[in-house]
Structure formats: structure tokens, C-alpha cells
Image 1 (tube, one colour):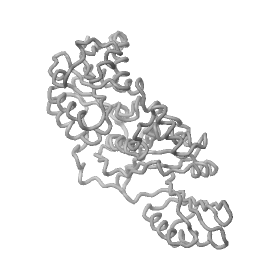
Image 2 (cartoon, one colour):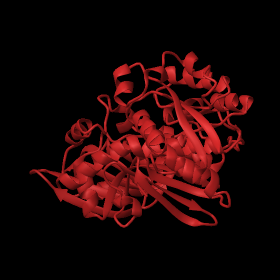
Image 3 (cartoon, one colour):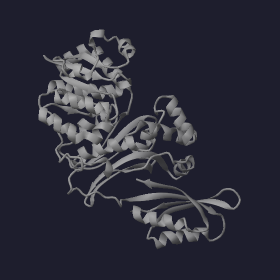
Image 4 (tube, helix red, strand yellow):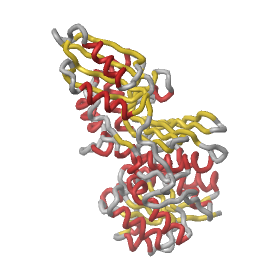
Amino acid sequence: MKKAGVAILGLGVVGGGTYQILTEKKEYFKKTQGVDITVECVLEKNLDRARSLGIEEEKIAKSIEEVVCNPNVDIVVEVIGGTGVAKTFVTKALKSGKSVVTSNKELFAKHWPELEAEAKKMNVGLFFEASCVGGVPIIRTLQEGMQANKILSIKGIINGTTNYILTKMAYEGSSYEEALKEAQRLGYAEFDPTADVEGFDATYKLSILSSLAFNKKVCIENVYREGISAVNKKDIAYGKEMGYTLKLLGIGKDTEKGVEVRVHPTFIKNDDPLASVNDSFNAVHLVGDAVGEIMLYGRGAGALPTGSAIVSDVIFAAKHSEFFYAGFENNKKGNKDTKFVSDFTSKYYIRMSVTDKPGVLAKVSSVFAKTNISIFEVRQVSENEGTAQIIVVTHECNESLVKKAIEKFQKLEEVTAVKAVIRME
């Protein structure tokens, strides 16, 4: 039976869950996977936290050097987060000839090329299943389950915090601020929620996933990013009336014009499978040229779901002596021959506040006509005396045309403000 020694760097929520799975299911893994996995040591500055998990004093390392010099450690699990200490520790582990398993999407999205170069040099594994979509096995699906396909698109709800907030706004009528406060109370959102609500977290994940899906390096700088902090519950309600659900989506497409990658709030039809993915759950929808459509769904965060993904990588590393590396030119700037689409096409939901008087709708329609944008649907909703909301859904058009139209609306005397511009899939 193969044996493997593991070190865990960080015993927070995910690290604790990983330790729990590895220790409680040790005999189960021996029986079902044919591997004997032992947690040889942990690195955790909060000694009380380590002791509360029942870890013996002699297994609590005092430094990363103690971890990487331990001959019984074959695999190092990094669940510290961030790109400072985590990068230093992961690099030291790789240089010492240890395989690394990480859940750190920011570290991986920003430093994948240099970490992989070190892993290749030392002929060790670098695993990152838990970096994207929590317990949903999307990485291994892309690497091992979709080889027969050219993947045409990847689209998903890949951040649980924003999905929880938008669900509260949609079903309980909460404001963005109220929903965020509740997400923070429940531990879904950090005290500083910027990484989640402004789309950075989803951008890191989409960079990784689209690189694997399209077999082309997609840097985070290539991803268009827009968060949910400006979303108004009015638009969610208007969208619902029109048959749409609002989600923060990560969208990647490999087209003849180039690769299109974007993260932003998106209206999708109520009958789209992603529309029913609520609360902190995540889902990813893939389209392959041979298999067609596939959707993976599950918990996007949490101690045991993310720990599940980490342990799957640990078991894979323990059972294999040959490892996956990127099948594309993996460097900081990507391949110069890869084209990226910035002026993408979409349908658009546009809401503007206007003075409620005759001829205003005609003026608005005229702007769309002059900008060469075709209108699919239009509504006018009277509000207070003298004001109204005009809601327009366009046919597919280029982003650049919509920006031109918005500039023209902002110059119209009758338009008080353009309140929302939301893309539609």
C-alpha cells in the first residue's frame, strides 16, 4: 500500500476541515483508495486552535523550515490565503521536492507560471482543485473529463458570497447594504468584502478556469470585471417581472474573433438552469463541441466542501508519480498570439430616470436608432409626479455602441440619470 505524509499550512476553516477529513477517514481511504495518508505536521501560529483539533504538540511545527525539512512529509497543503507568506511557503515546499496542494485562487491566478516552473524543475505535483468553486470538481473535469472536446464556453456562478447577497435581494426584497450585512453576520462575507462584491475573487477563478477550458493562458488582466455593489433591488424586481434573474456570472467564450472573458452582473432567463442556483451555492455550465452541455453544481465554500476538494488532490498526489502541468504556454503575459475580445456583444437591460412628459420615449428611441441599436422590449413606469422610469432591453449589440448611447442619454435634458446598465445572456 502506498503511503504519504501530509503537512497542513494553516488551520482556519478550510485547514481544519481538511485535517478532519484526513484523520477521520484515514481507514476509509486505505480501504477504498489503497493509500495510507498521515498528517505528519501542521503549521499554525494559533496553538490553541491546533490543540482544539486534537493535534499532538510534537506535530505542531514552529517554522516552514521544520515542515520542508521533515523527511516524512511528501505533500504540503497550503490554506493560508493571500500572496505574501503563502507564496513564500509554497515556493519553499516546491524547492524542497514536496508536492503542493492549494486552495488559494489569488496566489494561483497571479503566480501560476512561476510556481509551475518550480514544480516542473523538481518533478513534483502542483494541485489546485479547491481554488475554484469549492467542493465542485471542476478542475479535474476540465483536465481529465473533457479531453475529447474543444470547449466552446464556460459560464458560471463562481462566488458564493455574491450569490447569497443577490438571492436575499431577489427573494426578500433586501437592499444591497442589508443583504451584505447579513452575509457578513453569517460568515459568508469578510469584514472587508471588496474581493467578493467587486468581482476580484470571481476574476481569479475565471482566469484559471478559462485557461484550462480553452488551453490558452488567460491572465487576470484579460478579464473584464464588474462587481455587484451598484446593483439596485429595483432592477432585480423589474427583471423578475420581465422573466429574468440577476446573477454575478463568470463568462468565458472561445470564438473565431478571439477569447472573451468577463465577470459582471448578468440577467439570465428564469428557465436557465443557473437561475435556480441560490444562496451560497455555485454552478458551472460548460459547452463542448462533442459532449454538448454539462453543468456541475454544489457548495462553493465551507470547511468540508473545500476540504473535500483538497483531499481529492492529496489522494491523487499520493497515488500518482506523474503529474499534470499546463498544456499551453504558461507565462506571466500569456501567448502574444492569443487574441482577446474586448468589444463583446450582448443583449442589454438599460434603466433611466426621465421627466414624465410627451415625446420623451420618442427621444430615447431616436438615440438607440442613431446609435444602430435595435430595441427588443421597452417599458415606461410612472413614479412620482413628473418623473418616470424607462426600461429598455436591446437586441444583441456591441458594448462600444451601448457606451456611445449612454453618453448621448447623459446629454439629454429629459434624462435625469442612467440608473442601470446590465448585460443579458
